Length: 89
Image (cartoon, rainbow, N blue to C red; front, side):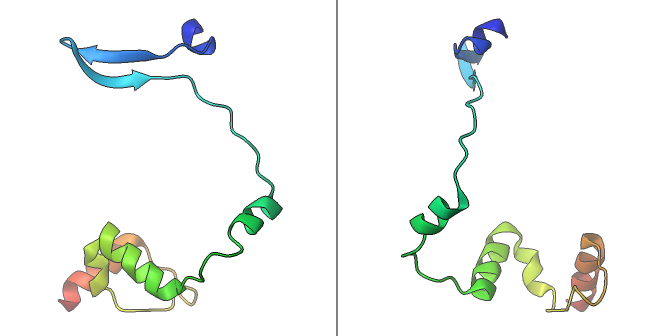
């Protein structure tokens, strides 16, 4: 651990085969919100609902079966949403 504090890195092996790396944590750099906004100023706008559907389809394809409901009006647990989707199939 002291060597990590000094900036040294290590390769972790199992039976002589590399399986991982142990590296020092880099200090986080603060970036002002204004700088981030300026960097993305020319970026194209994102259609939020389409983006969310695309992400959900990749992360958990089973969410496609869950009907669109207003989560703000009621409280739903993830398990209750999946149970509801399973029943509606």
